Image (cartoon, rainbow, N blue to C red; front, side):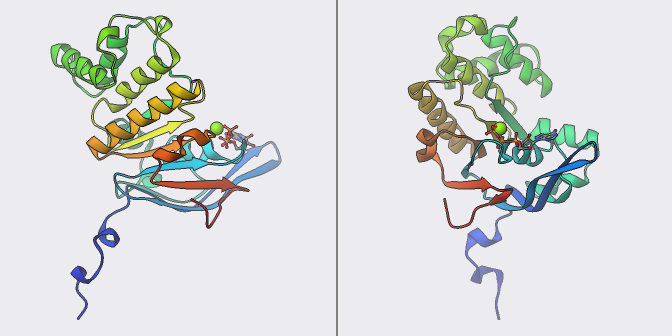
Length: 239
Ligand SMILES: Nc1ncnc2c1ncn2[C@@H]1O[C@H](COP(=O)(O)OP(=O)(O)OP(=O)(O)O)[C@@H](O)[C@H]1O
Ligand SMILES: [Mg+2]
């Protein structure tokens, strides 16, 4: 008789991110524009998945759907086993805060706050306040190599340093999912690669699952898997 032990462990694991038949059609006036035509994607816990494809192919749209920022026209999205398309707006906001760390192309740091305060603010949102928040923010910034930049404002940091602050902030609250849209687009080749390597190393240490949208072929070597999006579909047989 077959028992569950007959299956390889990988088959029993719940995918960290699972999309099934995800479709997205944008309406503008009478026109409708189909961007995603039935996406199936599974990302296992602890994996680093890249999502590549030409400009306008729907990468940001798909990432936004997988992050619960945008509701798909059809299909299922499960994050850590939870069907997020069934959650209320409030539940979704709580889910995102608790489980997803974001890194954006433009850093999205608060210009008036120091490096330390930018990370502290993210911890405050997770309910960590006062001295514990300060200590945790220091620790996170040490991990990304910015221990000597705590009191600088974003304008006094290089692009790579700003992106490292953004990574420290995304890791606040120990999210199990990290999602990044073009995180190296504002960086030169060297800092882009260094930033992605750091993200990879920290994600592996924390057993977080990472989804990175990128055009950047220089960061392909950090990926466990690569998916190519074209014509609204994940192209088979590559990655
Ligand atoms: N809110 C919207 N309303 C209408 N069309 C949209 C909307 N958002 C995106 N689109 C369209 O969907 C398509 C895919 O956009 P998306 O931003 O996902 O592409 P992308 O692959 O991230 O491109 P890039 O590499 O240039 O960032 C584009 O043609 C875009 O114009
Ligand atoms: Mg995009």
